[in-house]
Length: 357
Image 1 (cartoon, helix red, strand yellow):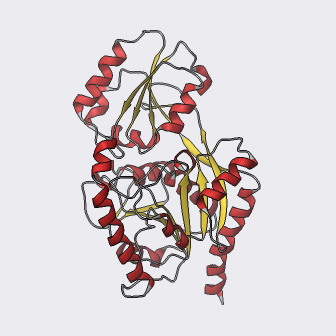
Image 2 (image 1 turned 90 degrees about the horizontal axis):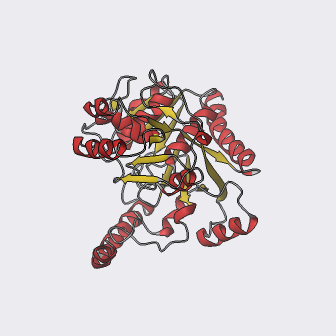
Image 3 (image 1 turned 180 degrees about the horizontal axis):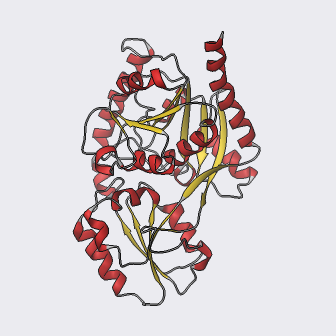
């Protein structure tokens, strides 16, 4: 795989040139951008997935929802539909994508919409909502957000960074300049001052930017078939437990690291991000499951993967298995949380004040 990526390096050079020219066109107002009358907060990244956008969006929804009528707009990666769709509680991942469905499941009364054209999507939402959250629109330059939050994954921060298709970068690191806030996600829970300084030196934030740090906090295991099994604490897993880990996400390293704290018997069935599971994939998993010790075996998947399993024909193959998904939330380090929350509330409130005058 690494050899293939190296062979694609000339294409990366061409891709980088195209991205650079496109950004220059927007910076010089050759291409039109749109601003909106309501506050628009963008959450995005420079890399292809795996930085923790979904937990970040959920964090912002939890903070702002009590004071604002929020709508979340996503491009709906992995869906089989086109155009603008406003999610309902009975939507499927095929209709709106796994990440929007995950958010709708977590906040049933939240407006979650998908549209590949962000300008059109926001235009459909602004009349009935007082704040828009854009999930993964950093490269959608046709929208100029009021506040731009850029995420960097700590587990990948110190690795070599290359543009697609050689690496995972959608645009060069210089693109970070457009962000107002930078957050390093998935850090150690007990991050040291030295680790903070190393991250800052690596990213080199601009003077106008604030940089914060966050980590992931995993919750109790929730049964895929909620009516059949109760929740299970993570510490109920021990070294005798055989875990089948099913993931179709961009970066499973933090989850693997967490589960390794409890058991080293992990059978990882790993698939690409947003992967549409096939019956053969599930049959393979079921066969492995039945070959493990009967008294202490468990299937664990992510909250995102669960969206692609719960409303499909595949679920019937999983009903007789001990299968759970693991919820995750983003937690800001201190004193970062207090400063970050204050910035978000001040930004959103400034629009509210402006409209009241």
